[in-house]
Length: 211
Image (cartoon, rainbow, N blue to C red; front, side, top):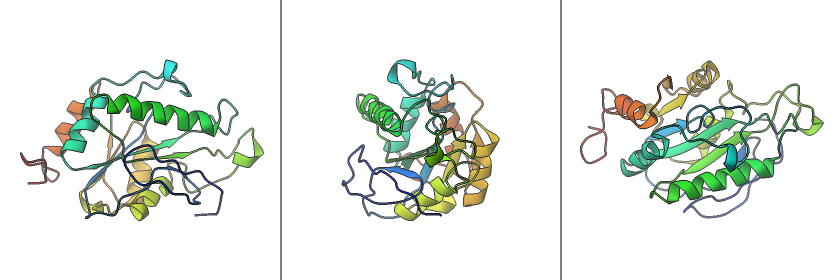
């Protein structure tokens, strides 16, 4: 990755620290045993993609999204969100708005005992209105920079992890990272996740571990 300034904000139970990476980080890993992970896109997977969502008032949860995250937590998966947020580059909202919305998402999930292990977002765009965000970066999907950054930061079992997105660029990023990608086309995220992870080769046993 090329060098760029970044922010790192703890949004959950992990330790707080600071760092510098091209894609924007929001949380720090606890060093534990290698675990399976699900990498989720945000707009169109967690929430309805109504266009450049940046405020809680505009955020509409996809059916089953919160429950899917809780089920993944309980099943022993890392849950990551990796999202393009070119609205920053276009001047529609700021990075602080992105971080604030992600904090709100974390608070909403905490109400049902669920959590995201880490967020990554890319604020760049090749035709950005704001010059500081105008660049061809490795973190904007379809490039895999956000995913590979998480793989480097957390002890992930890559061979038994998956990516879920709603567009071809999500699948291309998954392919570049060497992780199976699945396109969410349904209306219930929990049902979609369980359908994938309860069949070979991703079968989850009764205890929440791979069979």
